[in-house]
Length: 418
Ligand code: UD1
Image 1 (tube, protein in one colour):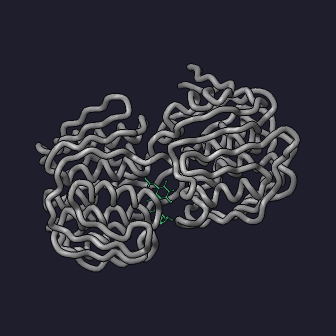
Image 2 (cartoon, helix red, strand yellow):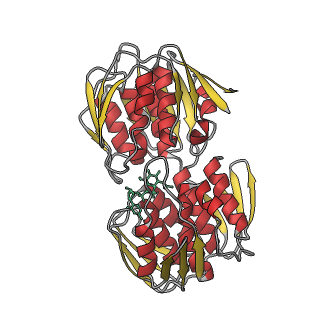
Image 3 (cartoon, protein in one colour):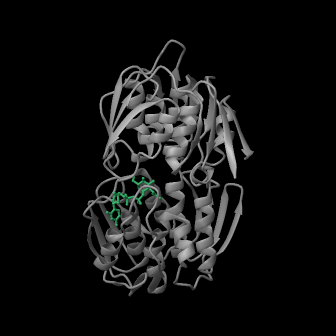
């Protein structure tokens, strides 16, 4: 088991290109099943979730090559229509393979992705979208789907990111017209639309709550660059806010971070948003201040994935901040670890009250989920003394070489075998 030793108290300084987005590359890898030729994806982050997705593609008969941040998927020989329980469990977003698999082969057999660190993970919206496109779904010791999607009206009860993506993928690989209403508006859905259209699909409306797909168009192979990861950017900005200093991030669109940047601005940081970079500065003698209530919400609201890192930064601030987590049930698991570092935070259900302290101190803490792990690293960089962070398997799901990124900004972080 490896752990990270993080010595806090030094400001972060420097510039970094943020790696590709996990939440974009995963649905795009699943979408490769719909192509008729090899697809080359660049700017792919090297993450354990990506490895798990590649394992599923190989299992289904695709040829996959990965070199650095480039992945080539050749789906020409893919024939399988079942994903094993082990593979479904290896990554909670494995359900994203359902739509393209069904559209490609006319059947799909999957086990449930199961719950996860954030609480239960229902998939009812994914299944009702598949049904709305004319396919049969039975649930008997797993999920069994049959039929060729023929298009239809998909009305999502909630703007679920995964269900929106699954509906798009199923519709693109099927026939007829599909309209998805109450669609999620996250930027990664825009990336999926751009990718599919670059191969010849017709998907319109991503970024709005109505998406229209014209199915039945053959998809060629092609080349596509994955967008930068806005949540990794939010985590690095949280680290800079916690530790102080000046950090410039390239490779992300600041508009995708608008709500997070606004919080840091209100907390007293200098924020500069430009076409090519976003910069955050907190100089000596510029303490963070508590901010008005932060309520997580679907995009363009404040992202649930940035809740933990931003809370970690505001744990050492002047004043109080109230957080309301509206998206997931168990998304305060980092709080008990922040308290070990001296934070004063109380939670009740979906609400957390952070009473800012002057400074946190180093401690032995454990990442219990992906973004909670990023949050603890951010908190440790602003804390006095050394933090020993375990549970790195969660962090490796979504941050490529977190310790290297932080070291390149001047942090003192080391990964060691415990
Ligand atoms: C995606 C992101 C994840 C982010 C989340 C919310 C990926 C790979 N992951 O996850 O990082 O935290 O969006 O922004 O893109 N729900 C149902 N039934 C369903 C599906 C979802 O009730 O069938 C509920 C969920 O329990 C949750 C809410 O809808 O409360 C939003 O979840 P959803 O948008 O689906 O999240 P994911 O796509 O799993």
